[in-house]
Length: 393
Ligand SMILES: C[S@@+](CC[C@H](N)C(=O)[O-])C[C@H]1O[C@@H](n2cnc3c(N)ncnc32)[C@H](O)[C@@H]1O
Image 1 (cartoon, rainbow, N blue to C red):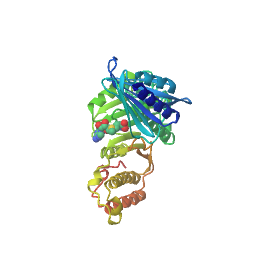
Image 2: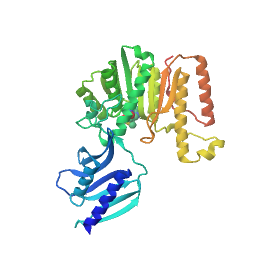
Image 3: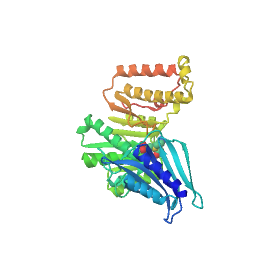
Image 4: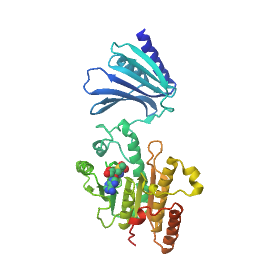
């Protein structure tokens, strides 16, 4: 009877795999003898043209990955259930289906409404993207890949984001006068865990053979210390990390200024610095645009739409970023605003790029008028950037 319950459960797992509605599977409540093992998370991955199941063995302090064919996976799940693991959870697009064993190892099954409505098959984690190679040591030292150079299951989105970012910066450089320069000076404001900083440095100095002097400015000393150690270990001698606030960093010039996910007005601090440092390229991925929200007065004719909190929040973000772009344009920059990675993985996916061009009084006046109209429309006293910006020219 108990074995029927388990066989029926395994049959459902098998069907989910053959019908391509298998989203993921979890083995939990580990009662076996392996030290530190907690769960196994199983996800479909595409390896070359084949579908495999990636098993993430989650230990207290580390993760171990193994890939198996669907048949091997079913056999492992069958062996483990009721023996070493007392919980098995199948997530399919039809429903969630659970088998649980009590202390006497008596199973029961139940279904729940499906938690997922689509199957997301990841590319295999040894994938070599166009711009960064998962085998690069810095990725392992920063925790994105394991010792074999395989991207960790939960770091895929970060890995893709890094690759996309390097692609964008590389093409901006290629299309600018900086392509002719012998040495590039780059500042990354709010470098945080520095994944993107390392990736860009490695790409430019390693693959493109460009001389680069790069600095990550970060207010958290623990992150500065870790990033500094990783840079030393990788022999990245022209990459350094400085423990300072963005506004406190003193540097005369920079070719490229980056500020990714520097929260709220930290992005404005970075813009103000970049302008002062005469940066040819500015790359921003703003987040948490809160500053103007407190002052925002939605015009009466727009109020029926923006009475909803979430829409007002988006309006506030769009206005903030639009005003930032207009400010940069007033100073001769050409700007673009776009989604740089799919919004499916993160909501912090808006990028602003600004390329320095000729400054003209006429353009300045035109943009300032547009800014002032917007400020007056939304009754904004200021938008922070306008208070701190000090153009070099
Ligand atoms: C969300 S993290 C982003 C890290 C990295 N740029 C990325 O995109 O992966 C933002 C980082 O900016 C730092 N930060 C925020 N405001 C700052 C400021 N005014 N000065 C220096 N660092 C700042 C935070 O400490 C944090 O590490």
